[in-house]
Length: 562
View 1 (cartoon, rainbow, N blue to C red):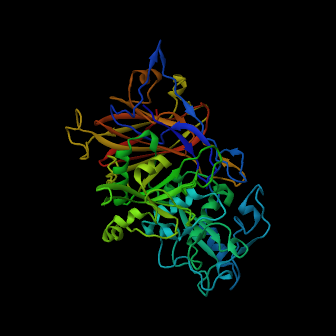
View 2 (view 1 turned 30 degrees about the horizontal axis):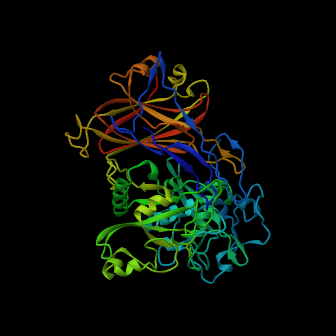
View 3 (view 1 turned 90 degrees about the horizontal axis):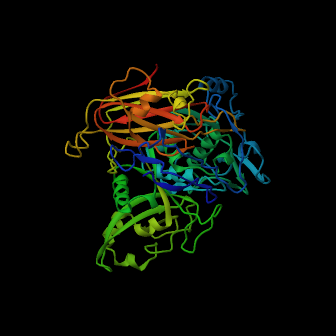
């Protein structure tokens, strides 16, 4: 079956909700994650779709949807940047006219109260400011007056590998003194490549305090600038009010990220997956349930409803009080404040007194109001809605440990009006016009021995991403409802016709069509030829997409052109 979950965009509590399919489909040959086509009187199974509405934050930003133009909003033209810098007089301030220190950079619709907002450089706030003070830590991150917990929880998760944050926001950029240039350079992963973003040094303040995200150390500013650069890519700060941590994880790492709905999966298996992922460099976020749309209150047990957190550790410890092992998870609120879990195993819980001091040191137990806390895994599953897991390399066998992939191919394609924008299988004659891709698997991998099922398998992870980059600040990109289907095909001499598709064996799909930025599926298939058909639900939806394919062994992947 295809699991169903309540899909939410995290933004410090204010969320929209829709019933929708699991973001990461477990696509395996003869696996429960596969949906096979049904036939009734010669008519195929009717494909289904769901819309994920935008999130609604305090002071919601409702931008009209627009067509993709160039996706270059916020992206630096490095040659132009060099020219601008060369023309600056000694001591002259660099001013970013694309993202100036003005109200429009906070909200393009002027939907926030801007009174009292003053843009200042770090050196106007403290003496000798720095981007980084003693490296990078999750404890650096303090959320400000913006609903971007989804982005900041992703940043906190990624700090487990400090070099990744410093790959995004270059170190050694001076904020004062003779080496100060007046601008900050960084880069983010956007639709298959790393793009450069620059901003000037000015940050919005109110009452001598930074208005948005800041570092716990007032001398440190990497948190504020990585948030500002990400806001520039989206057009303004308010444009990142609400979103999905799974997308931010990809933008920060270029990796593969998948979202799992806790209610739809075996929680014992999920615990093992989280335990191994943490130990093998995975980046994990989670979000807590809301009681109703727009609910962002703090519960009596200290949790913030409709809010994104980082999951920072998974441990199994022995408790002498119950004479048994206890499964625990450690979670951090990007608010970085006293709003912590007050239930079992909270910081001051007497049960910690029954735990050996050496064990507490080994797992990093601390009793302080820093936004981070431990809770029993079963209670975590009752309170939280989902977890998102990102790895730099794919985890083909879902054992929590990223695997080395021997081959990776990314191809782009287009759904063109009147040519290749055929829509879903509800109209098979038009569906056949969609772009089609041939995947040829020749060598089984070592992850599954020959006794796994009836024959050796090839592990493959496939991601379908639609173009999502913004072109102008006053419009948001239109995201189509997308999905892909995989068909077994022996002799492929050209694109499959409608009749070919009807006669072919479907071996996997990503389920219900949904307007996600990316949908990811994993499969374990026998060697052979397979045709992948990415499509939008409605016909005549123009757009550009990318298919990313990973496998431990070499494969061939190409578009079928005729």
